[in-house]
Amino acid sequence: MQNSDAASPLAPEWLAVPEDVNALHAPMWAEDVQRTDDGELAIDGVPVSELKAQFGTPLFVMSEGDFRARARSFKDAFDAAFDDICGGVDVYYAGKSFLCTAVANWVAQEGLRLDTCSGGELAVAARAGISGANLGLHGNNKSDAEINRALDMKLGRIVVDSLDELERVAKIASGRGETAKVMLRLTPGVHAHTHEFIATAHEDQKFGLSMAEDSTEAVGLSAAEEAVAAATSYPNVELLGLHCHIGSQIFEPDGFAVAAEKLLGFLAAMQEKYSIVLPELDLGGGYGIAYTPADTPRPPAEIAQAMAAVVRSKCAELGITSPRISIEPGRAIVGTSTFTLYEVGTLKTVRVDAPVDADGKENVTFPRRYVSVDGGMSDNARPVLYDADYSAIIASRASDAVPQLSRVVGKHCESGDIVVRDVYLPEDVAAGDLLAVPGTGAYCWALSSNYNYLARPGVVAVRDGSARLIVRGETEEDLLNRDMGVANV
Ligand code: LLP
Image (cartoon, rainbow, N blue to C red; front, top):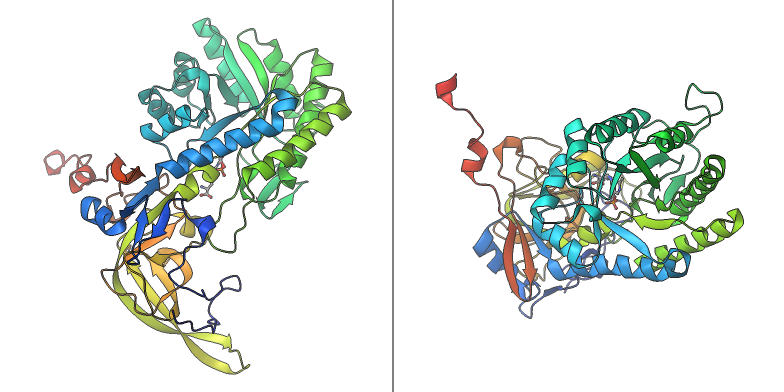
C-alpha cells in the first residue's frame, strides 16, 4: 500500500492521512465488519456486493449482533456498577435514535426497556408487543391523545416536562379513574457536549422544569419544586421520581456526575420537606460514539463505574437510600451497529485556495475531490443539521492508490448536501465503486426525508451470515401514494 503522507492543507487538523486507506478503524465499525481476502467489505461474512445486488443502494446495513452486544454491555456494565447501590439499573433504549419493530424486539430480548417520545413511537412499541410496563414516554408537548394512549397501554412512566403538562396528565388520569405513573424532567443547569460541559447555564431551553429558585412566580420556589408539590397533591398521579438528560455525544463522565449530584441533592430535600419517597432517578442518555478517528468514546463499564462512585458517595453524604437508577442510551447502542452503503457516481476535482501552504507560500491552490453518491442529506441530515463529521471507505474493493483528500456529497439540489466533509479516499475511486459510511445507526434513518422526491432507503439486518430487510426501502409508488392526484384539483 502506498502512502502519500503529505496532509492536504485543506484538511482539518484532526484528520490524519491514513497509513492504509483500506484499513477499518475498529471503534467506528460493528464488530463483525471486515474485509474479505479479496479486499471487499463484508458484514458477518456477507459481502457488500451481495447486499447491493439484493437490496440496492443507498442502504442502511445493520449488524444485529453488534446492536445486541452493545445493548447487553450497557445493561451488564451498569447493573454490575450499581448492584450494591440500588440493585442494578433499568436501561431504556432511546427509540428516537432508530426504531422499528425488529429493534424493539431485540431491546426487550436483551433485557432493556424502551424510551419513546411520541404516539408514533408508542405505536411501533405496541406493534412489537412490548409490555407497557417496560415503556417510558417523553416529549415537551404531548397531546391529550398521546397521554391517553400512554394510559391505555399502562405505561411504566410518563416523563412530565412542565407544570402545564402535569396538570393535564392529572386531569386526564382522573377523568379515566386511573393513576398515571409520572417522572419529572428537570433541567439541572448542566449542559454537556462531547468533551465539554457547562455547569451553570442552559436554563434557556424548551425542555424540563427549572431547578433555579427564581424560576416561578412563587418566591423561592423553583418550577421543579412546584411540580413535586403539585404531583404529590394529585390523587391520580403517582410520582415515581426525577429525570434529567444533559446532552448528546458526550465522552467524559463529569457532566453526568454533576447532574447526578444535583438531582440527588434535590431529591433528598424534597423527600424531607414533603415527607415522600421518590424511588426512581433517571440520568438520561447521551453517551458518545466514534464517527471519525478523532472521537474517543469510553467503554460503558468505565462510565458506569464513574457514575456509580458519584451516586454512592452523594447518597452517603445525604444520608439517603439511593433511588433506583435508570439511563436512556440511544446512539451508543445503535450508532456503530450500522453503516450506509452508497454507490459512487459523478466525480470531479476542484482547486481550492489555501491561505498559506506548508512552506508559507501564499496563493497556492490545492485539489479537493468531490465524490457524489446516490443518497445524501435525505438519508443523513446530521452533517447539514449539526456540522457532524463522518468517515468513509471504498467498500467494494481494496485499493493500492494514494490517499486523496475528498468530500463525499449527495445528489440533492443543495450545495450544503454533504455526507462526509473531509476524508482521504484512494485516488482511483471511480463511478460504480461502493462506498461505506460507518456510524449511521443513530439519527440518520430516524431523521430521513423525501427531499427532492428521493425514496428513503431500507434497513437490512445481518445475522448469522444472512441479511434480511427489517424496514423496506420506499418505492416510487410510496412517494406518490399520498398525492391526491389531478382529479381532485
Ligand atoms: N433521553 C432523552 C430525554 C433524550 O432527549 C435523548 C436524545 C436521549 C435520551 C438519547 O440520547 P443519545 O444517547 O442517543 O445521545 N439528533 C441529534 C441528537 C438529538 C438527541 C435528542 N435526544 C443528533 O443526531 O446528534
